[in-house]
Structures are given as C-alpha cells and as structure tokens.
Amino acid sequence: MTLSGALARPMLAGIFIYGGIDALRHPETKVKAADEVAPLIVSSLGLPATDTEVLVRANGAVQVVAGTLLGLGKARRLAAVALAASLIPTTYAGH
Image (cartoon, rainbow, N blue to C red; front, side, top):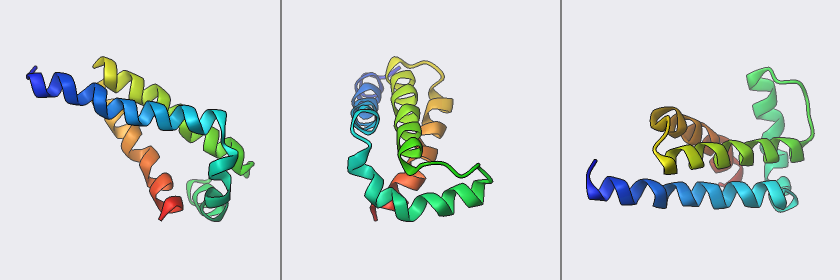
C-alpha cells in the first residue's frame, strides 16, 4: 500500500464517521430535509413506511460502520459501496 493510500483512507473515513455519529445523536437536525425525500426512497425500495427519524439514524449507522471499516482497511470495497449508497439519499435531500 502506498503512503498516500495509507493516509487518505482514514482521512476520508473520518468524514463519514463524524457525519454518521452526528446523525445518530442529533437526527432532528436532518429530519426536515429528509422529510421531502424519505417517502420517495421508501416507496422506490419497497420498504415498509417508517418514521423519517429512523431512516436518518439508519443512514447514520451505515456511515459509521462502513466508515470505520474503510478507515481500518477491512472489507474496503464493500465499505466503499455502502458509503456511496448512503450518499445517494443524503445528497438528494441536501441539494
């Protein structure tokens, strides 16, 4: 592994871990933006209707777990795919 890879992976992972912890601890700050997007995502994925706060917390949990795996260099590809998938609703709600 190159020096840049050894430094970049944990630095990138830290952003996701921090954001995921924030979503787990303070979901109410993200619920307002997610309220517009959550019904579309739930219906398109065929998920049972649930509270938007639960979805925000679930997305945060995915970011924490996948970010930790990426930072530790374990299951890197799976972690990267999970993080990319978690960014789709986050980006859609935020922009």
